[in-house]
Each structure stands twice: as structure tokens, then as C-alpha cells.
Image 1 (cartoon, rainbow, N blue to C red):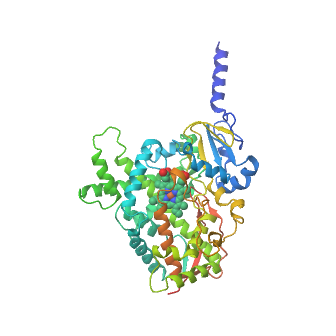
Image 2 (image 1 turned 120 degrees about the vertical axis):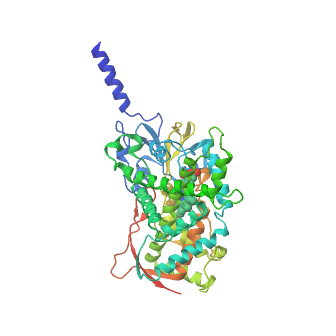
Image 3 (image 1 turned 45 degrees about the horizontal axis):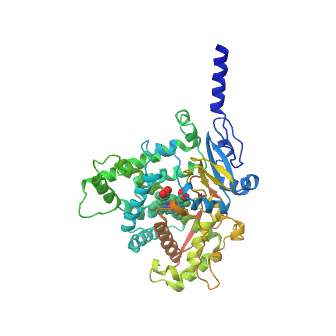
Length: 485
Ligand code: HEM
């Protein structure tokens, strides 16, 4: 009898650690007990492994196991576009890490779905639009920030990249918290640095802490857990303090910014059971928006500089167009955009060739479904490799070449391309897209109107190979700045 119990116990133990892929699931890397495919997912440059290796080896849709949970890496361009389109692929997984940053609940946008996400996203989008997201009313703030930055840089002939963080986040914070921070503000810069480190340490395809959360107690640095925790706590404290300050000075007749609008909605919902408008919810929304905005715009602008110092003839064409259309006696404005097709094409080409989000945050399958003839069970995690779309040779011809002309028609007019899905697509498209596009355009145009940039004499040619992380960033490089005006 004892032997029987022992055998049953061992069998049960084995069953719980062995990992079985679902039936008729796409092929993919091997699976080990307990951890699944995680050891076979590279920690760095996973987008290149997916596009250059896995797609050839396994096909456009790859089956993985994150611990005992099935996951898909969608790499083929047509398949990515299909998954963006289909509603059943628009959930988000409920993971240890996502709850860990949201008071052990499901809050914010990045890691929620269902009615909670719909209500919060609709409310936020509506009010951020009213407060000026994507509108000309924010243009003045964007231009002011660009001007302050330019004044600072005029005195530094040789400059290291990485100076767009505070100016870009200042524009966003003007809408969220109604405040502008000095570019030297230590506390603000420290928070940004924590968030930057968090983004660099993450692996957008899979995280062992989600699979075996107890490991973080033994190895606190595992998979960037410590950095994530420091950034989350820093963000929580900063936003809680801002919310309390707003609550003390709230004016019922006027809303200064998004925090005011949300606080009023919280008051309206006071006493309602299960309301989705809570202080913890607001803190998580601010953390989502702040971290999404902090890295993305600043890193994209660093890439712009990198590509234009590596391609001086393209930089010259950008400046020639700016000189011809805007001149040198005033700053470029959003109204100039339609008359600056080469500027827009160059900016778009930078976003394509080195996307800051080569993989989207994880999606989740909301009901049993099929993809490419495979059976995909409900709750499968989905990693969409946008880089697969942005680098597809059948569509772009020469995706590895930096060529802004691909976005110009035969009359030199800017041409949109539906495959530019670097802001996502479908129901989960980026919530900050219009704001990000406006900041990118004004900063980029103003910067190259004011300065000519080059590689400092004696410096090696900087590499375009991206640093890995939840988002990508160029490796640090230096530039020589020369005033044009
Ligand atoms: C160059 C700039 C940016 C790029 C390339 C970018 C790209 C993306 C991508 C690829 C997604 C994921 C879509 C998906 O899961 O399918 C996303 C989501 C999101 N982005 Fe952005 N983003 C940028 C700037 C911003 C800014 C400035 C903000 C903040 C205002 C922002 C807020 C968000 C939010 C909240 C989501 C989650 C949406 C949801 O799940 O409902 N992003 N973004």
C-alpha cells in the first residue's frame, strides 16, 4: 500500500512538472519540465531570432510554453496583421508581474481587458483628447520644451545622446498632472532613470518570475525583478503625492488636467460597489501612461539623430526642405506638416527600420480559436512580432536599407503605408499615438532646423544595433553639434 501511495505521489509530481503542449498547437522550441520553453527564448534581440531563425525553422506562427501556459509568437507579416484585426486576440494575460505593479489587482490599460479595460480606456481617451492630446492646443508646450532643450545644447559642441527624456515627458505630464519640471529636476530625472532601467532589463517575450514568482525571493535580481520593483515603487509614491496635492486644491468648476478629471469621476462613483474609478486605479493609469511615454518618444528621437548622423546626405535633404518651406525666421509648426513630405518620410522610416516596440506587450486569446489551421486554446498568451511586419522583404523590398523615399509617391508626396504598425493596430492601438506623433514631428523638425549633427572626429561609427529590453534603444553614442541659425 505504501509503495502504491509513493508511486501515485511520484506520478502526480511528475505530471505537475512535465509540460504538455496543447493538441494541434504550432511547432516551436523544445519544452522542459516546469519552465517550458523559457530557456530557449534568447534574453536579447529576440525579434531577430524570431524573424531570422524561428520563422524559417518553425513557420510564421510558433508555439511556446511559458511554464505550463501555452503561448504563440506570431512572426509572419500576414499573420500579425490578422491577429491585430481579430477581436478574440485582444485580451491581456493576468500575470504575477502585472499584478505586482498594480497593488495585486488588475488595473490600468496595459494588463487589463474586458469591461474594466473598455470603461477605463474610453474614459481616458475621451478626456485626454479634450485636454489636448493630438490637438494643436498642445503645440505651444511642445515648442517651448524644444526651445529650452535647444538653448541647453547650444553650449555643448560634443553631446551624448539621451537628452529627450525630460522634455518629452514634460509635455505628457502637462496634460496628466498640469506641471512642468525643470530639465535639471533631480527627483523627476531620478524617476525617469528608474523607468529607463526597468525598460532595459525586461524581456518582452517571457519572464521566469511570472512562471515561478517565489524565485524572486531567493534571487531578487532575476529577470530584472528588482529594477522593476524599484521603478514601480518610485512611480507609486510620485503619483500618490501628485494625486493628494490635486485633491487638496480641486476646483469643482474647472479641471486643470487629467488627475482633476479622474478625481471628479471618483467622487461621482463614491459609494458605488465595484466602481472601476479608484485611487489605486488612477495611480496605475499614470504609471502606464508615464512609462509608455517616457521611453518611446525619447528613444525614437535618439534613433532619428543616429540615422541622420550616419546618413549626412539625408540630413541635408531634411534641412533643405525645412529651409525652403519654413525658412529660418520661425519654428516649424504642425500646420507645416503637409508641406514637409521628406521630413515626414524620414521620421517614418526611422520608426520602421528600428521600431522601439519590435514585440507588442503580450495579448491573450479570449476564446478557443484557430490560426493558420492550428488550434489555439482560450487564455493562450500571444506575442506579436511587429518587427516581422516592418522588416518583411516581400512588402518593403529592401527592409535593411534606410530609405525615406519608400514613403514618397512619384510626385514627392508623403504616402501612408498600412503595414506601418509600429503603434499597434486594431482595438489595442497605442493610446498615445497622436500625442507621440506631434512631439516627434515638432522636436525632429525644430532640432534639424537649428542644428547640423555629425559623428565627432575620432569617434567610431555608432552601431544601429538596438539595445534589448521591453522597448529598444540605441547604444549610447556621441554627436557633434553645430548651430545653423
Ligand atoms: C514613438 C512612440 C510610441 C510608440 C512607437 C508606441 C507603440 C505602442 C505599441 C506597439 C503598443 C501596443 C499595442 C498592442 O498591444 O497591440 C502601445 C500601447 C500603448 N501605448 Fe504606445 N507608443 C508610443 C508612445 C506612447 C505614448 C507617448 C503614450 C502615453 C501617452 C503611450 C501609451 C500607450 C498605452 C497606454 C498603451 C496600451 C494600450 C492598451 O493596451 O489599451 N504610447 N504603444
